[in-house]
Length: 285
View 1 (cartoon, rainbow, N blue to C red):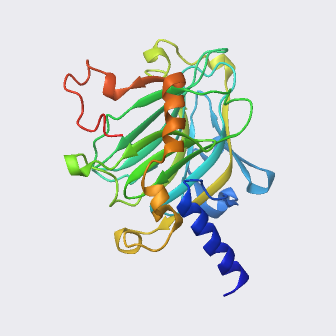
View 2 (cartoon, one colour; view 1 turned 90 degrees about the vertical axis):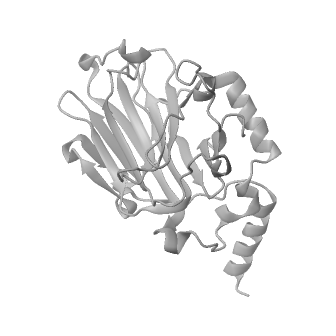
View 3 (cartoon, rainbow, N blue to C red; view 1 turned 120 degrees about the vertical axis):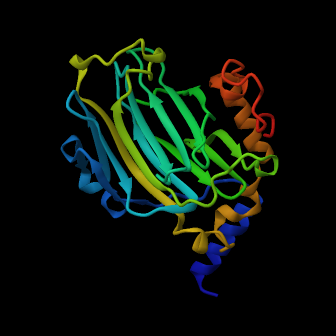
């Protein structure tokens, strides 16, 4: 057995014993992404290793992946719009973009200077969402790049911030809740004007005197199955199929509790106005 195969085997054994994410392999922007809209509001820097999206009165901007994926791990390092970012929305998400689409997303909701960013996460399956959670972050996301990622397999989706689990969304098909597992999803990001809802329910509007607003990206990492159900659903020995990643271990649960106790500010499960009857998937963690 060659040295590289031995190393790969040892890595799989190590991962099978713990839910530690493997090292990321970054690529340049152009290797896996393209500008989807408003090319004149984008900047590619440092030989293609860094990307910026720009929002002003004329337009926002967005980019997407060249391929679609079914299960795996996707990560980006993002530095959010600094200072008075009220009304802006920086989105990083995966979506099938079909009529009854699947989607998993981070939405970073800007705020007035000196106030914390809010990160909203959501999951759509078969066109149905309404699974929002909101958190503050435990750092200033405008001062440096931080890693945001999705780990997605047949049993669960984990949202990570700098490898700290922010949220786990379980497969609850057994109790009639759809789960994203049959629609390949592209990877997307955008910066846009959401001041009708993003900051204090739309009370804080964008101050265009502070434009242009800039969100920066680097560390474009994809370790996922490119293709559809036929090529990605059968077991292939990928690390995210290992038992350690199909369940939520004790360490992950401890970190999730720390995040929930200290930084969660909204959970759809606790919103009795929207859901007089508690959604069936609540309490299934």
